Image 1: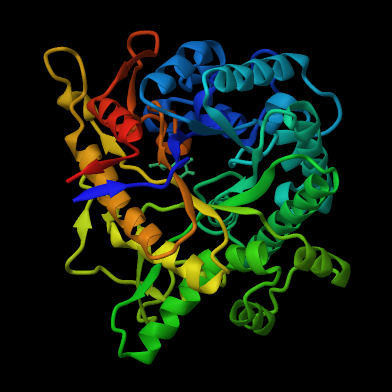
Image 2: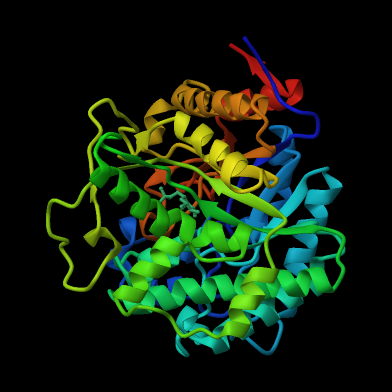
Length: 463
Ligand code: BGP
C-alpha cells in the first residue's frame, strides 16, 4: 500500500532548548530549576550528567541545521530558554542570547526549515521559582513579558509559536510525583500550578493576537488516551474518564473550548481544591483559545476502577483509578513504555469529533532506546530498524486519520539528535542522529535519518 501525505505536510522533528543547547550557565544565561537541582544533587541524574552537558547546539547549530536539511526536514521545533533570554526571569535581556537565537532562526530559514518555537519546555528560571514558580501570579506576568519579548525579537520570522510543551508534566513532576523540581506532593498546589499555566497561556495568546503578528499560536499537549479495562464495567469506564479528565481534558478543554472540564471542576470543588481565580480570568480563558494544537503521543493509559490505596498521603488524581496492565500490550523493551500505534489515531479522531477538528499536528512521537551503541554497524552507523518500524507504524495511523477527515498538518519525531533528557540525561536515545559523548558530541546520521529523508522526498512511503 502507498501512504501518501497531503501537500505541504510538515516533516521534521522536535527538541527543546534546555535539552540541546548546553553550557548551562555560560554566555550570560541565568540559572534554571534544572541547573539548581543538578548542582544540589547530581546523583539524581543518570550517570550524574547535568544540563550543562546537553548536545552543544549552542555552539554547533550551523552544522546541525545542515544535518537536518540532509535528512529532509522542512520544519523543526525547539524552545527558547527563558533563563537564557532573561537570566533573572524578568528585567534585563541577555544580548548573547538574542544573537544566538537570531542566528539559529535565520540559519533554519535560510535552509528552508521552518522554525516552530515553544516558549516553555519545563525550564523555569530559578529566580522565578524562588518567588513561587507557577504557583505565583507574579510569575504568570513575568512569563507574559518574556513571551512578548520573544514575539518582538523573533516574531517577524517565526510564524508558529507554542505557549507550553506538555503543561501537565510540571504539575505531575513538580507537585505530585516528585520527578521535577520543586519536588512537592500537594494536590491543592498542583491545581493552582495547572490553572496558572493555562492563565499564562491565554494571556500570551491574547497578546500575540492583539499585536497582529502574521502567524499562529497554539499549545503542545501530551495526550494519553485512557482505555478502560472493561468497556462493559461502568466503574472502569468512569475511572478511565477521570484519568482522561485529569491528564488530558484539564488542558485540552480550556485550550480549545475556553472552559475547564465540568467533571474535574466538580470533583476538585468537592475536595476543596479549587485554585485562586477571578471571574475576569475565566472570561479571558473563554475568549482566547488556540489556533493550532500540537499533540505529543507516546503511550496510552490503561485504567481500571480503584482497587488499591494510593501510596501518597495527600489527595492525588490516582485516588480515583488504578493503572491496569493490558495483557496484549507490546512494550518498548528499552524504555518500558507500551507501544500502541492506534492510540495516535484515537487522539486525532477525538480532536476531529470533540474539538471542532482544529488544525493539529503530531509534535512528538518517538522511541527511546537504552544502549543503542550495540546497533552500530561496521561503517559506524546505528542501524535502528526498530525506530523505522515504530515511526512508520505510527505514520500509517496518522495517514488513516487524515483519510478520515482529521485536520493533521504534520509529523515531528522526537527527536532530531540524541539529547539530554531531564533526570534520565542520555539514558534513552531518541534521535535520527547519534551524538557521541566520548568524541566531542560528534554527530552521525542513523539509518532512520536516511529512511526519513526518503519519506520526506516522496511525501510518504510504500509498504
Ligand atoms: C516528552 C518531553 C520531552 C522528552 C520526551 C522523552 O514528554 O516533551 O522533553 O523528554 O518526553 O522522554 P524521556 O527522555 O524521559 O524518555
